[in-house]
Amino acid sequence: MKLDFVTVDVFTDRQFGGNPLAVITNAQGLSGERMQAIAAEFNLAETTFVLPPKDPAHTAEVRIFTPKAEMPFAGHPNVGTAFVLARAGTSYGRPVTGDRLVFEEKAGLVAMDIEREAGAVVATRLAAPVPLSFGEEIDPALVAQACSLKPEDLKLDVHPPRVASCGAPLLFVELKSREALKRAAPRAEIFARDLPRDRIVGIHLYVQAQEGDIDVQTRMFAPEHGILEDPATGAANVALIGVLTHHRPETDITLDKTIGQGFDMGRPSVLRASAEKKDGKVVATYIGGRCKPMMSGVIELD
Image (spheres, rainbow, N blue to C red):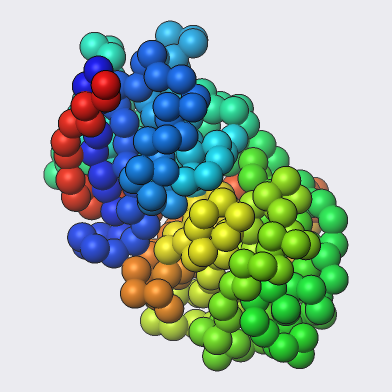
């Protein structure tokens, strides 16, 4: 069995930046176990597997795997997969055209907008498949320990460390300074003991610090998914813009932020985030960015 793959760097306008993604474009017939093994072989933050849609009105079914587990939804895999399919212009013999794609995923339907320049696909943007929701609060002392920080590094006046989700539950933690964000480091043994995979996907640290065009700098640790640190996490940042909007005092607002991630690990990523709040409730969240093609090839399975 031969599988075609493409890799792209996501949330960047240059090669060797952003977050790498592998896209298997003809995954029909693969078992979930085979998909997991292939994702472990690539050993990237995520690998996607493109299948024919169950509903012909949609573009494709997309399954997303980290090296250790399947994800119901993730951001950079959707942005990269939409980029790959829109550039190819076809999937399973069906044309992929226009400026809107729809993916079937475990978390629901994911709508993708396509951006072109001079006719060429350069960027994509997703709408989160489910509304922003909040989960448990987690002890700041435990969070500090898991991230090699001091409790006083955490900024707690707006919100405590709290789980939020737009399809993937992550723990959101605001820090007081850019210096603290740079100093953070995941302690895998603390995650394994107290923050297992069935509790949270990972910890998303952020600081609101202006750096050039960047409004917010972030880092995401998910060692229980085989991702010690992720260069760019669309699922985290599409929820983060929702969290920031939720805590704004206005009852009606559209909030736009440029988010940086991966800068402290040598893979700078730039994500364009926006959210809408109406009558005091966040009703929509979006995340997008540019992509750069890297590699293509064939996997030969016995």
